[in-house]
Image (cartoon, rainbow, N blue to C red; front, side, top):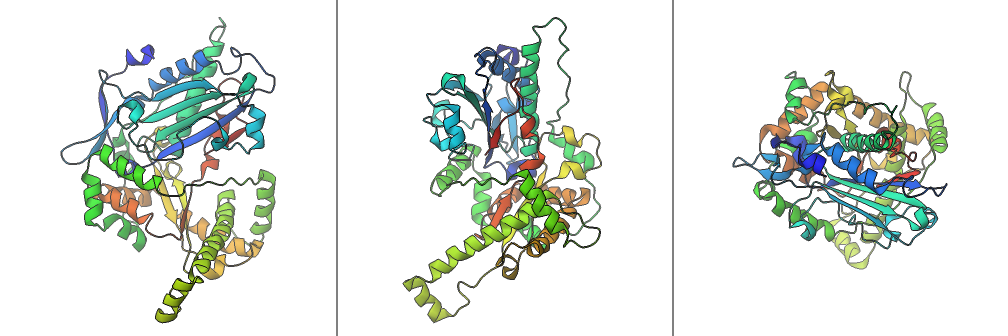
Length: 447
């Protein structure tokens, strides 16, 4: 830790609307590593190396040791104070559970006899660290008889998005490998990398060239309520406590479904036969279409079952069948805009640059069997919607998010005000399965 604390400089990183919009949640991922050879502690992801490598990596990611604050005009910023650092929480523990047991459970983190603190995705103040918002938590869990290791990492979303998250994790892993190899006199030096944290980068690519935004998008970024204004102006710690309390009242039960790459490729091959000429569906187009049909029907069944109960049915009889009528389903896809920009350093920027792009799917399209033809219809809508996100589109979204100090908060409200939505985070395009700490890539990566 001293290598970082003795070299870090005091600096301030002002956040923009993209960062603030995600300030109420965090990105958390579990990386599972099996020690099939039952290598020794010193050979398989050694504790000392992982911890030392983390603090060396922080030298390139100082934002992970800053305090989240707001100035008099309510602009949110990260204050990295070398004399008062807000260090990530790091723990390395052992448990009496075999790695194979976790493997058999489908890598269910809730089966661990350890509270991982993963039930709430809000980067809220923790009583263990003085009530402050901690930017990151890293927890290493070593399984019985050194049979495997779990690396659990949670980083506040206001610091970075999924892309920046994997850049950090891969750098941490790269430094770990280098530290283990550096004992060799002929070892190569640590490769140099460049990471941009200054949010002024947005000004380098934004264009004033107008582009058409959907009415719903404009509404979500320009409409205000008294509550959203108030919530945007309270202290970051207060806002975090409010969101933690509301998220804790929600059933956050998760389910894990596994579809092999071969199965998805077979589905894509079948669906592609129904695509218009010149259109090539991505795996994400197909996956989003499949999830839309499955989840859309599940939500519709829940609604139908509720309206069939005696009291709701009586209300419906009085006011007509409009109540409980099937409504459109809105899947949203996260688009990494770095790949859509002409700026040569876009992939070096570690701030938030992901835009959620929604499509509207009418009931007749998702209330059907997931045939190749039905999937193609939805996949085409997804493909066309995502293709509209370009430099001009990202610029317009950014201008609207930064127009007012509370623009981001109303956008956050709009993303949750309808229950017939689902957000699909396209993590498959991020480099999770290249996070190798020196013992090979993970056997499983899970949220």
